Amino acid sequence: MDKLKLGMIGLNYDTEAGRGWPGARYAPDSIRKMMAGIMNRMENGFLFDVNRNCLVDYNQIDLKDFGNTDNICHYDNLKAQQNMAAEILKVFKEGYKPLILGGDHSTTNAGFMAMHEFAQGKIGIIDFDAHLDLQIGTPVQGNYSGSSEIRRATEMEKYDPKNIVEIGPRGYNYPEHYHFIKESGITIITPDEVYAEGAQRTAEKVLEIARKDTDYIYMTVDIDALDMAYALGSGGQEPKGLNHFQLSAMIKYLAPYVDAIDFVEVNPMTDHNELTSHVAANLILDYIAGAYYGAAEK
Image 1 (cartoon, rainbow, N blue to C red):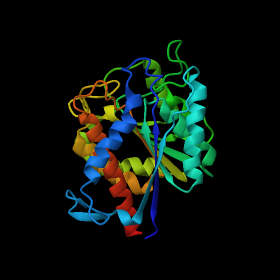
Image 2: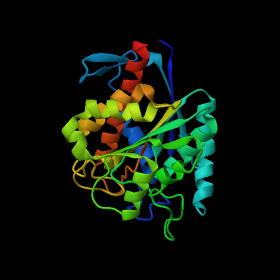
Image 3: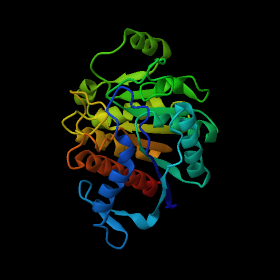
Image 4: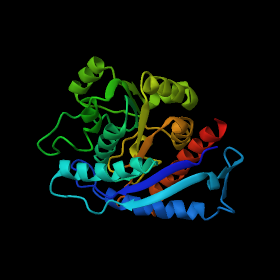
């Protein structure tokens, strides 16, 4: 197999946590620490995937850490997104698939911007999230917040709403969002549907929608897609969410088809003993393992 090239980059930014708890800026380093604890079990470049009962050969994986984007503007949110997008674009240009550690969900705007500039074709979006993030814009949060990144993507040329799938939204929301979803063609898959259909069938459906007439896929994983019982430390928890088994299985299945991914809204400030960082670290290793299996099978 060709060496799998993944470029990890931390977006230590939570200035746009206008509605949820601040603190996600500390997540990249916290997640790295948890990943290091797990990867310390590696021997001769191999890590045992117990769930799949096989070895992941990290000798075939070029996992480069590009560090954190510390030089971020904090007085102008759009400028901050552009600063971060420029750093993510460097990861793309060096030939690596970005593996982005947020940060609040506004940092996904930066990922969308970078991929839009880099991609030579249409882009599908897979969004695991408790919330719809379809705000038009508000006086408090502005236009580039963690409540509006999916809406902003629909306004960009290379993203078609018909190739956007959101898995995990629940609860109660604005009637305007109901009408926008119906008119735009965005696909919403609730946790109820995942429980009814199962993770495998759901992932297959998601992939079919996101890949139809597209050339790239961007996947964003907001940790609050998980039920609040599984992710204590996040910016905005919601009950009645996905469980860890479902999210892990879907990430592993989708990983080979993903060209950039972010993990956002982990918040060490509201967590207990960095447990949610540990959950995120395991999901990231699931993503890496899934991408490795996909590359090995080609």
